[in-house]
Amino acid sequence: MAGKGIDPELGVELAEIAAAQGCELLQVEFQAGTLRLILDREGGVRLEDCETVSKLASALLDVRNFGPGRYTLEVSSPGLDRQLYGPRDFARFVGHRARVRFVDAATGKRATVVGRLTAFDEAAGELEVSEIESRPVLRLRLQDIQLAKLVIDE
Image (cartoon, rainbow, N blue to C red; front, top):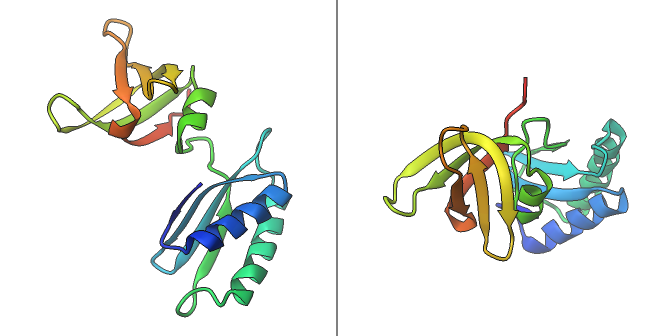
């Protein structure tokens, strides 16, 4: 679980709240007065999951006196065009199409590819993406990947 702009201890407590509801807390981000919690769950996140986590998280945030003033709490699922948050997501979504933004190790320049995730080697820290059939498979190092999101198949 990644957390941006929050105390790591609070992130752990929020993750425990999500886990108690059978969910995984994928992302915590506090930016521009909005605290976003992104949940995942085997079989999909339900509205009830978001509601329960929101109520429990809100109570925790009140007790912890979170934020310098007013803020908005958003609790949601990652959605169909979800961001891939790390090795577990890369392994889980092999076979799916994704848009991957990365830094080309050879040139140091940013590049983006849209293709099918064909393999993930956690030990080597590499993701394989097949852009189109006429091109070779790209092997990307995880440390070079800046953002990866699923692309909805039509």
